[in-house]
Amino acid sequence: MTFSARSIGQNRPTLAGEVRLEIERMIVEGNLAAGEKLNELTLSAAMGVSRGTVREAIRSLADSGLIDLVANRGAFVHETTLAEVRNLYDLRGAIFAMACAAAARRVADGLEPELPDRLTSNLDQMRRAKANDDTEGYYAINIEFHDMLIEASGNPKARTIYDSVVKEMHLFRRRGLSIASNVARSIEEHEAISAAVIGGQAEAARQAAETHIRSGLTRYLKLLETAPGAEG
Image 1: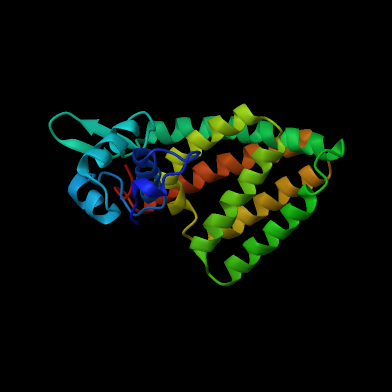
Image 2 (image 1 turned 30 degrees about the vertical axis):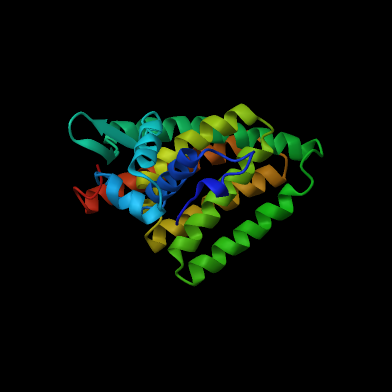
């Protein structure tokens, strides 16, 4: 992807902001691996911008949790520690459980009339992705499932915090859904969450969401046991 100053409209980010978003996307989608050094020259050539612009974009990512700036060595994609993984799952679980409970209440109050159909459609897409062994497609649909529930909570601040947390989690979370049995179990957990939200059962939705996030951590830890050293 290349950028130009002319492509930056009045209401769009600066050029460095555009480059930051692209680097962020590359990290989140796994195009840049954990521990990999960010090569300013390579990135600037690929995007058609100056090294200074790339450098500015990289520095602006320093507080995102996605990269580490190492003195005299440069910038590297962050390698998540096990302690960080646990903390991120705990935080994500608390926010997601709250969001699912709030979404269920809003469904019961008639404030989210389209959510039941959207959840049902999303689950159908998940089942098709599983049937086709499309783990990449499933991962994208899985993200959409969680995003629509966060949005349906009606809590913009929770959405902002959640987005920041899951952005860091993409560094390792994708691997947990690379095994067919994990996908099958994930769908079952999504079905439980959906049923509670659609039924307007706030506490049941909260519990189902908490179970889902805890199970996600368990799946990830088991993956580490079978492939030691595969993750930071």
